[in-house]
Structure formats: structure tokens, C-alpha cells
Length: 101
Image 1 (cartoon, one colour):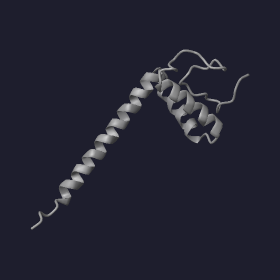
Image 2: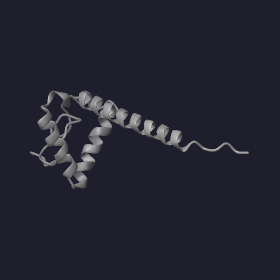
Image 3: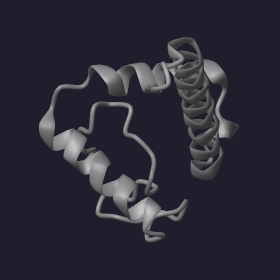
Image 4: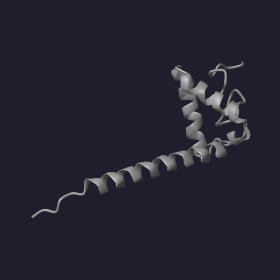
């Protein structure tokens, strides 16, 4: 005869796993903020920048940010000034990606 499944313990285990994943995600986001140097910004400025990024629809701008992010994670970005616009790698343009040149 088969052993009956304990659904309560399985649900609790899944809830615990989901909580651990959520906590890990929050910790990693905090580490990312610190690694990019954005922890030096006021919380209001950082929140405003993130809200702006979340609303941008321009695919070219997002692609530029994605490339800068890839370079950052590959160690090619960091905080040194670079690129054709002289913008620091890993930072987000607050004007929606419009070039000043």
C-alpha cells in the first residue's frame, strides 16, 4: 500500500523555498546597487531613476543599457568613464538615453 502524501508539509516546504528565493533576490539587488556605486545616491534619487527606467519604452535605449550591464558583469565596465558619450559605464542616463552630442 502506498504512503499517503503529506500536502501540508509539501506546501510549507514550497512556501519556505519561495521565501528564501525572495530574500536572496532582495539581497542580490542590494549587492548590485552597492557594486555599481548607486548606494552613494540618495534613496529618493535612486528610486526616481528606477521608476524612470521602468517606464522607458524605447528599445534602442534599453539595448544600450543592456549592453552596459553585460559589460559591467563581464568586468569591462565598472565605474571608469568610457564610451563615446563619456558616460560612466553601468550608469543610466536620466534623460531617457538622449545623447548630449
